[in-house]
Length: 524
Picture 1 (cartoon, rainbow, N blue to C red):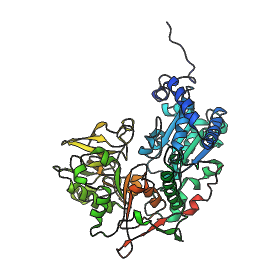
Picture 2: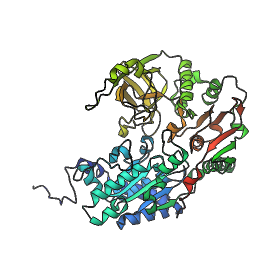
Picture 3: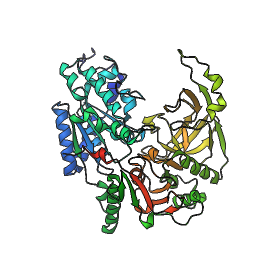
Picture 4: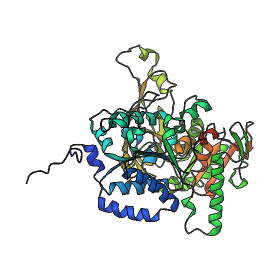
């Protein structure tokens, strides 16, 4: 029989990207959509109806869904995705971080999906050319969902906006003057959380880098979710009350409504039951409260996956991790990196004579592993790169070491849908994107860091039942305290060790909130 002939606009079976996005089981998605739609609250249904109407009428509107953790943003993303995909249409689901993308159906990081430059500036565009498979996929897309948007620099959204206007103007010339080229785009997130990281940036620089400081925000319709779905259910009244009070307290900290405020810096009184008192050695104290009876449980995956110590800076985190690795009784294995200068074709400057391997070995910066990594079987680690997001291996995934080879590490995934899955981690060549380093070098090392403790910024997206917050130095930017406290799922799992400026244990903690960020978030 002859092969059916399709109109190219209807279906392009040579485009792998489009084929991947149409490979969903429409019958099962239709059932899933019915089940999810039936569970929507009145508030969620209003949001859903606004967005789905815009998609069906091809209005090309721009929305921001604002809500704190537990209000059901992910639930709405799933409902919208299944509604559109069960009709045989395309929705692109992306997130600002690898961890957040794992929670989305068919999720990817925004950078990998839209080829956004790593260091975007005010004139950047995405690396998408007219007529390529990716541009054809975008043309066919009905809806773009982007979660955890506030943590990304506004230049990333503006780069996507410019690119979509350029691609879609060939379909309709008026798209050149419409936000995101007339595509319906929904961003989501919580502005109480950590904002874009600007190295050496002032408060003004950080606020200016946020999404709602962009020219795009004038076209944005803000939709709000306020009802905490984690407080619904079959909990006893007393437990429900405790959980609601704890949730309201964290939310008030995120809004900067608690404590005495001086120029955006609040001093917040910590309830007595959350404070760690009377400790000689701070590291052993925070470890004992977060990992009690560690030696008996050091190989217990369930014990390790629900616990973590958070601190604002990398040096505090490293000192705790070194202590924890030394306590583990397994045989250590030390891995060294191979560090080399990157020589550009047009600028051979002889830097290899100045920046020797010994000097490169001493460099420590966020985003790449240290020159020396000491590992043991049973130690939890965190990935620093996206290796295979479809298998749950992305930047921020926590794993536990099960075997140590010379060229490969065997581990089990600790969190997410793929928890318990056995994986292999290879060495990778990594180049730091830290602007403070005035030259480029490459480090070949396992892309992991020990994660008994992690920085507050790196913990964003994690959910733990036992959290130790180690504040030897105070938090230093907007949203850090809110993010740290909201990682924990229950009040009794939280313990805080705070020191004042004189190095004495305190019951007051500094909270930094840039309230001007909330200035134009009045929802509908």
